[in-house]
Image (tube, rainbow, N blue to C red; front, side, top):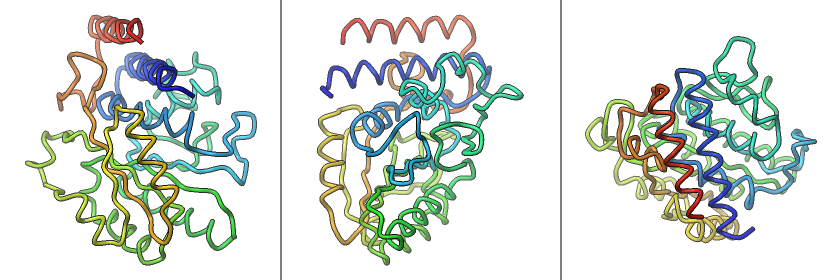
Length: 276
């Protein structure tokens, strides 16, 4: 799939995010928008064995959204991919909907793990990768973490185990947008230097531009070729990417746009789409 088509799909995913959060009147748009390109690349290029008609294929690659509050980007991608109708997106966080505020593997087709408590997603992904090794399977496991999430100690316990066990079928992606709910991560509780921390746990570390598909392609190719150790991709991103008033604004970590803001956001994304 060429870069132009990936950009088009990612823009549609962003529209899905804004649409669902607006309909719910709550949710987390900022960190969902920042990771839309990453999930687009994973689901349309990188991950193997995916089939909306057979979402539990035992040989498929797995994805764990460790920063589970960014569920709108996962739902937006799965809907675009055909796991469920896009019309369902407006039921986000509604009572009885299969699209709850955090991913639920028992409710939503295509969700490989229920997440929400920060740090637990990567821990589960490490377990999945170990299971693959023990079972002699060649599937790979990908997990997306927020840069605020890596302030959790459980993240580093999981990394210590993954590095020790040489889980080269595991790829940890850090959505490094520099902001969390309380402001700049460097001021709240700095996790820097992020790359050196992963290296100290015996990870291969790759830096990438989260909004450049060529950069992502190069990073994931290197990760696939890396043997004997897990990989961490540090993906520099822009929180709220694509929506003018949300970009680099921590206020949009966890609130929904009103009707006027929704129209502005969708107009921004429509303009981006025209230029693709």
